[in-house]
Each structure stands twice: as C-alpha cells, then as structure tokens.
Image (cartoon, rainbow, N blue to C red; front, side, top):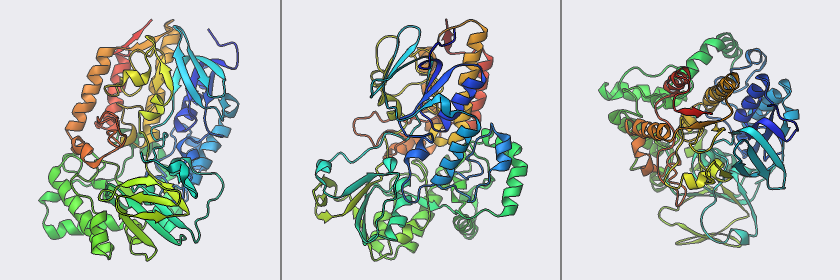
Length: 538
C-alpha cells in the first residue's frame, strides 16, 4: 500500500550523506515514496560536518566517487589526487540537485526515537516531528558521534573550543593565538600542520602514538584525468572486487625475502611517492596486514623515518608507536605532519605519561602541569560504527532498543540487518566491510542489496522481513574469524576505534568484516540468489 501523506512513506531514511543520497535515489527510482531526515542543514553527511582545517579524504578522488552516474564521471573533474572536504561536499550537493532529490529531504531534524509498531516504523524528532515508514534505513554513517575527553571542567573553559566533527561553518582564525589540539589520529594529523602555520603557539596532546605515512597529494594532470575518465567503467568493476574497495597495483613480492638494500630502495620509493599504504591494503599473504614479518619491516621503516625527520630525539621517540602492528588501526596519511614538530612554536605533550586531568577556565591541566590556551581543538574521534545507531532510541519488535540488544557486543547480519528489528536496515553497519573499505563502494553494495530485497518483497506480496538470530550469530562469528586470520586480531593493542576500545565501557570487539570488499559482494550475491538465506519474510 502506498503512503498517503508526506510524513508517511514507504522508505524512511535517516541521514543525507552518500548513503542516504543513494538510498533515496534507488527507492524513488523503484517507485516507492521515500524521505530522508537529516540533522544537518543540508546534505553531505560526514563532509557537511567535518570542515576543520586540512580536512580531506585519504582515498584517491578518482575512486571516491559514485558509480551510478556514468555521465557525471565524464563531466566532473577532481583537481587533486585526494579531494578536499569542500570539493567532496560540492560533488554531493550537485548529485542531490541533478537527481531532483531535495524535495524528498527534511533538514535540521534530529531523530531521537524510532519504534516498530507491528507494521510500520514510527519516528520522532527532538522538535516533536513525527514520521512513519514501512521500511527504516539507517544511513547514519560510521563516524558521526563525537567524543570529548572524559575529564571534568569543559564547561568552565573561558576560551573557544571546537570538535573537529562539529566544525563551525563560518571561518575560524587562529592567527597569533595559543592553541591546543587534543588527539593525534587521522583528523588530528590533518589539523595540526595547518594550525601550526598560523598559531602563536600550538600544544599537541597525544595519548597513543600513531603510524603515519605521506599522503602524496598533488594536482592531477590533464593526461591523468583524461586516462581516468576513459577507464572509469573498468576501474569501477575493479574497485568492487578489491579487498579495500579501491584497486591499484600492489606489490607482488614478499619484502621479508628480499635483500636489505633492495627492500630499503622499494620502501623509500613508496614513501616518496605516497604509495606506502599499498603494502597494507590487501589481504594477500605477502603483504603487511597478514604477514607478521612484512609488518615488522614496515613498522621499523616508519619508526626510523620518524627519527630521521624529527630533530629532537625525545620528541621523536614520544611520537614513535610501539607495541602494536602498523595498520591495525586506521593508517594515517599526512602532509608534513612529523616535520611540524621541528617548528619552534609547537610543543608535544605526552598524555600517556601525564594524563589530562581537567579542563580549566584558562586551559588544560595534566598530571604534572597546567597550560593556558585561547582555543582548544578536540580531535578525539568518535563512538564509531555503533554510536550513530545507539545514539537514537530504536525499539524493535520485542520493545528492546538496539543499545540493549548490543549490550554484550554489536550483532548484525551482513552489516545490513539486526535480528528483532523487522524492516530496518543499516548501511555500512558493524559486521560489514564498512570502515575497511572505500566507503562509497560498500554503500552502493549495501543499498543495492537492500533495495533489491524490498523490490522482491513487493513482487511476492511480502510485507515484513527480519534477520534470523542464528544467521546473525553465524555471520558475527565469521566476522570474528576473519579478523583472527589477519593482524587485526591485535587491534585492541593500539586502542583502535575499529574495536570500540577508545570508548570507555564499550565492549571491545573487532567490528568490521576484514574478509575483503570483493569477497563480501560474492557472499551477499550468493545469499540473494538463495532467496535471501538468513532472512525470514512474512
């Protein structure tokens, strides 16, 4: 039965990033009524919120784009090898307008509650708005619920403070100011060099040192762009088969079996050209995310590089990661990050040694000192993967919330469905390739799977679908086993957000499927062909 009002639709979608945009497009194209509810003032998702200095994608721009608009591939030109936030947001907004999606989107709407009434999902917003949908799609992303340090006093701070994941839309100037950046993950590593260029003095508060390698960003040449546009169809197919969702030439040799001189030459070349990550973005047995000997070689090379670049030996050692394999938390890719610590106006504070104890009216207190600042920037990450779903009170068929259902750990079937929550789907949810993927590729895989399923339901007169609990349990065991077959089994040693270890009280488990994006598509295709094995229809 088709919905009768603007607030009662067939497919209700939470979130207007790449996932929400594509799911809306597919639903409308299939003849369903659909609506997106978005907390922000416009579409964009991650790229609407993350406007901090230096924000850019670490997946190549020619791969980080949608496959369902081949004409746009030929019209759109990415200026850099790795796209800046503003370029990605402009691209997303162009897609919204091109496909005529804006009339089906409701912005400035914070969804706080959703519950299954037996036949439909009822959704409420913070402002009191009410919507309903036969199907509920959580296109809420993976890195959207910001974390700030769990220390007292933030409300007392007399200066300005920011979280990178909720950056103001108006320009923020740091010229001549005393600034603190708390956090040195992927975001902090992008922010720190930019702010250091203009701040009077910058203090960097680091807890867990991260491995970071050169991004290798540059302006794309006209020849490169022309070649890419000619090869897009072939490249798109290759991306969907690649382990991490984007294809490029990877080493076929085993570094541990090469002479030391040849090994150093190859590693130095990859470092100089921004290709160092190629040793860690495949599950091939000769590469570093599976092969411990190769991983040791890669980690030692980066450690030596840190000491080569950073002039102060004590600072270099504080920046150097120890005790966990390289690549088991997100491999950071930077532009002049380590070089920044050679500046006279930059000070590194080791919060592993001297933890932050309080935010004070004038700045930050640690176990051994007090610091005064005009501005504090929290690059302290997110409650990743699960947080975007559990931050909303979502109640399923038995009245339990997702948060209650996941009290002993997140459980999904294929990363797209949760047993006990009929007609609800998650895009890039825990249990899928998600954050171990070029996100757009996995988004498209998930949306295609979900939309084809609900179309099949319409053809067969089915009204509800639910993931079987035993299928869900078996899938999560497969997710666990996949991680155990790689060095991701040691991700908890790095306090990696892949495991939830960065959130106090959250169960530590390896959340994404580390079996490969291409393998995941084979699995989901087989399940779909077998009448959506593991799902129950009624």
